[in-house]
Image (cartoon, rainbow, N blue to C red; front, side):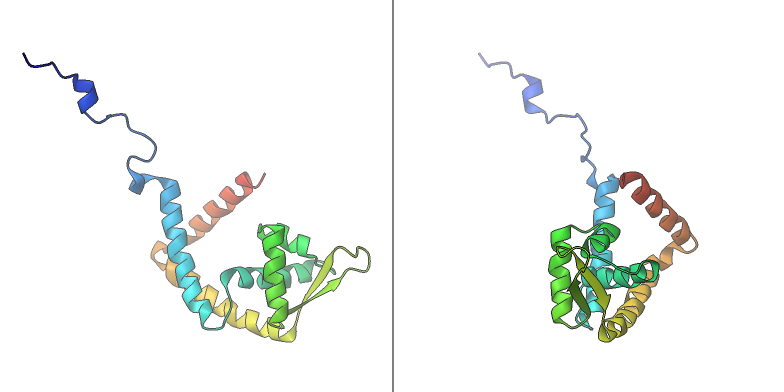
Length: 162
């Protein structure tokens, strides 16, 4: 006599989980788009010997220097939203390349005061052109929606930075 088979143990679960259709998951799509964009940036910035993270810290240093007299590593890390230790490591590399100076702060000897060097400013200009062109090319297919996309990104940043 044949045994009766329990049908529920043979069929795969029909319960749909959050990643059952990964291609429709917003987080996965953001990851894919981000990876493509970063790869394009890397290809462009490799030509001048700088990474995207290095560019971001140089650009943020330049920006913050117009807003405040003294820019510290902590100010920079907070502004760019990069870990303090990672910021310190990247800044040491940039200092070795002669792109910026890191000096002890006279008020707080634990803190470092930062300043772009002349060669840092020149490299930042060249890198800025590469990044701007890459961004324009990457977002071109959005057309006027790229402004809406940027607004959406700002909203996400604001809401999730709290």
